[in-house]
Structures are given as structure tokens and as C-alpha cells.
Image (cartoon, rainbow, N blue to C red; front, side, top):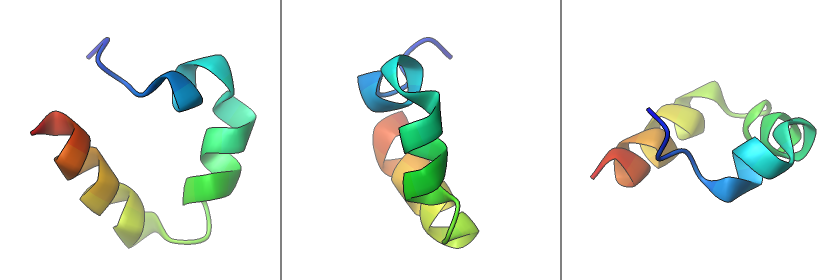
Length: 35
């Protein structure tokens, strides 16, 4: 679970702000990262 994008680890606030508006999109992005 340490393969999270640097954007979320380096800037958690920016990551949340970027993914907050679309929770469903978050799952989609997470799926792409998990690939």
C-alpha cells in the first residue's frame, strides 16, 4: 500500500482536494494506480 502516488503522499491536502469532488472518480483513479 506504499505505491500511492507521490501527489497524495507529498501533498495529502492537494490529493484530497483533487479527489474529494468525485468519490467515484477516486475509485477509478485508485484502480488505475493499482494496475
